[in-house]
Amino acid sequence: MIAEDQGMVLGALAALLEIEGDITVVARSRNGKEALQAVLAHKPDVFITDIEMPEMTGLDVAGELQRRRTGTRVIILTTFARAGYLRRALEAGASGYLLKDMRSEELAEAVRRVQQGLRVIDPELATEAWAEPDPLTDRERQVLRLAGDGVTSGDIAAELSLSEGTVRNYLSEAISKLGANNRVEAARIARTKGWL
Image (cartoon, rainbow, N blue to C red; front, side):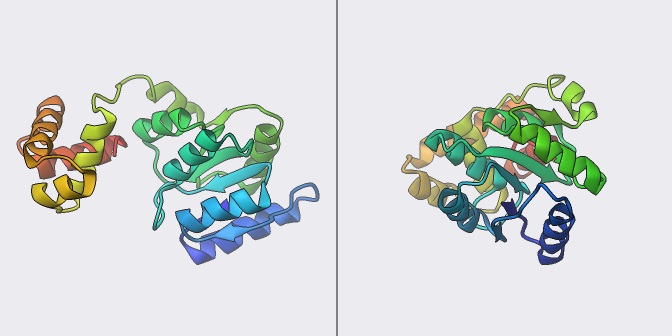
């Protein structure tokens, strides 16, 4: 099963993998919610997903699959060579984290290895992943992501069922931890590091 929001890339990935005699693509999706439903319906051995997708991120889908204990192994295939994303992918239960600039033969071999229960991670990122830990809590990350998207403190409070003062406290903590001057700068720093 493959999830990728760019149609041409999705088609190319499916075609490249189906050239392999031992790999069958059972479903494709262009957004996270559809991907989750398709994985639950088709129960593939391996689910390949991008990180940034409409409706749900690939990391959110991976986390939900882990929570539901589906047994489907997840490979994150992305352009984001960021250690923070790799750490979050592993925490969400991903078995693989690969960059899109790899050769198709390498991707096919990664699918086989992950299906066998092994982990496949881009070697350079594996080294970087533990160099700088993510200082944000899950709630700080959630609040900062919304603030970075331009959502007001009042709307964040309503969306997350928090008081406006609590939202301001989370933002203040995140800004302080990241050494930023304001919420926009803090969100930018966190996104650059792969923590959002």
